[in-house]
Image (cartoon, rainbow, N blue to C red; front, side):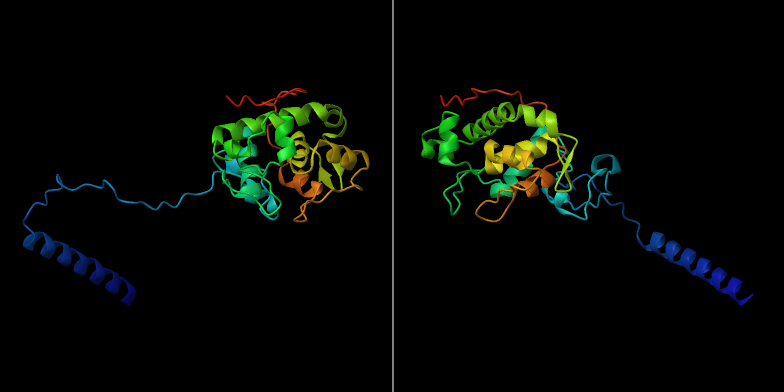
Length: 221
């Protein structure tokens, strides 16, 4: 009974407040001159399960995953770029590796780039270099891709994108040795990153866009 009375009083008080507000506020507010132009909005968006399905956030996979690019080829190259340089076209690391994708000078020569300054100053050239190098590596590793994709080496599922990412890190020759030794010959770069790390981190991206090309070169014009 007491509970019902309290509920009734709350309703009555609410009605009284609304009547009072409408009585004293007789002016009509003109919103025609109000604008949201230039305001910054913050949104809370629930995860899209169709996008993030299959990403294991318990390991490092999610750190290289873009919810917008997904597992596409663009997602693949941007994930590598983020790991290599944070996406910085102008950076040179402590070992002299260059640009967004951290190319060595000898690798650049193989794909037709000899002018380092021009390379660093030209983002479009760097993007072309990434594709040319990946095409060349895909040709060199074509037999290993056919043989090992779908198998596990060092507990990591081998995928084409993992192989190509590892080749970007260590060179196609080192990846051959890794796969054919079933993970015993696990190259590590100067910072301690191994082929196995890259095989796992960049697994499952769509790299079908890349066509194997033994003579892949960059047009520097």
